[in-house]
Image (cartoon, rainbow, N blue to C red):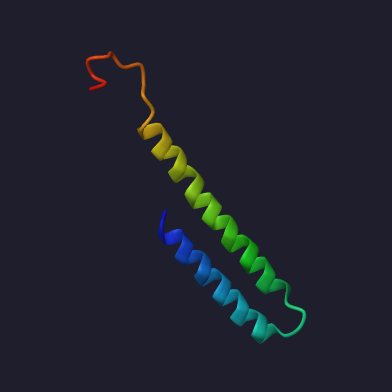
Amino acid sequence: MACQVLFGLFVCEVSVQLRRIEGKHSPLSYAQMVFGMLVIIEVIFPLVLHVVATFRPAERTPELAG
């Protein structure tokens, strides 16, 4: 999950370089940035759900609670 921040910076930097290559009107660089950010959401959301499900107190008896 922590590496997704670095992935976001990587996607933005590649998009900036692509914009420099394409010129003034650069729809591909904006599309790449949008889809790169969607990949981050796609990866983080299931991980957060997994962490929440892992630490969810499921119908435990008081003896198991500690």
